[in-house]
Image (cartoon, rainbow, N blue to C red; front, top):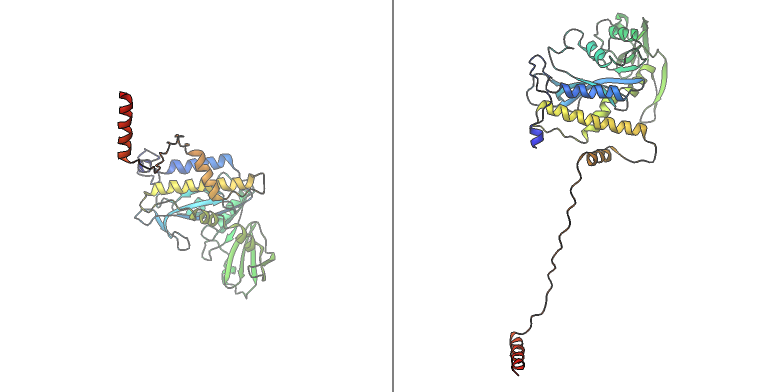
Length: 326
């Protein structure tokens, strides 16, 4: 408890940087992941939340998250849940705030992965036609849903009426913008997938026909949610903990989750049954010092014995005295 109370990561006082207390930890995590691991082609970009109900200048609310109130993280991850890089939202005055906030976030998280042919899957909070063109010029593909009110959207798609199952597509400068109606109309964007319709089987065994961009988006978009789900099984952030300490423990949890995914990728035997819980215990056993070996004390055993008659012992004593006099 004393270590937790004295825990801090930066002694620099910077009033302009609200994240100065935790920035060394964030930078260390991002730099280490960039040094030791290079991801596959598919990447997903989404938000994550660290629980924080107390007052904080940059506390956020996201209704579809498990922790609706807290510190918002922008996370770049693989579809299986390996976190590649993350950034904390610091509110107004942050280096990514202002006009084009979402574009700045995407380009910041992808700055080491551009010009490499990656495919990034994002939801309608980030996607836009302008961003898709910028990423395509850097040899990076993007796919995801599109906000119908986003600037630069084709006007023709906004007004078109579709029946269930119909798909309407427009192409411009290598960007495919489509509108497909299932239960409701879905506007989507992709610079990798065309307007091909593909069959897919749902959980009930029903065969459905959907645009290929939607199918790939549903397959590769859940990386951040999978990571959040895994960490939710082992919560370690106390409600009364300072916000930067919560971020530290959340980062530590992400490191453990990444270690488990890397172990799964590189294990030599398919018969290994080491799960995430066992891996955590194994790491703790290696980090913590072994207790000193103390010799066991001999236990004193209490045994019931019969006490001789006192008078009989006195007679024996008198008899011995008489024999000694003779």
